[in-house]
Image (cartoon, rainbow, N blue to C red; front, top):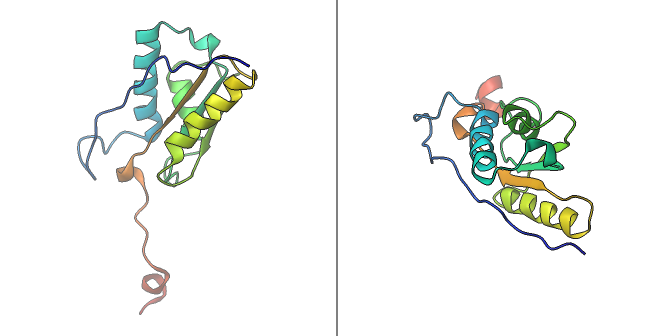
Length: 133
């Protein structure tokens, strides 16, 4: 079994609903953090085996937020990337999945985290409003 190390831990700025980050997508925000990690650690994006991102509200963010993060950060398109949703535990579950795949010897280098842009989520109304009260 392989030893598993966390080589970097970063986060973005914390925004507020419709605040200064409102025009960014979750993919853009996550990519900026990942680019910063790659620069700091000097990890070659070609060495990454997989990208896993927790994302609770994918509606309005486009398909495959983890794939968006990976590609925008310069990770090769051949590298698998997937998003998962386990509510508040999504980012932690992404890290757990990364740990498991490295510990089992399936992968050597996995990026894991979570990304969210609440301002990018659609504004939905209850069904009763659409059909009239």
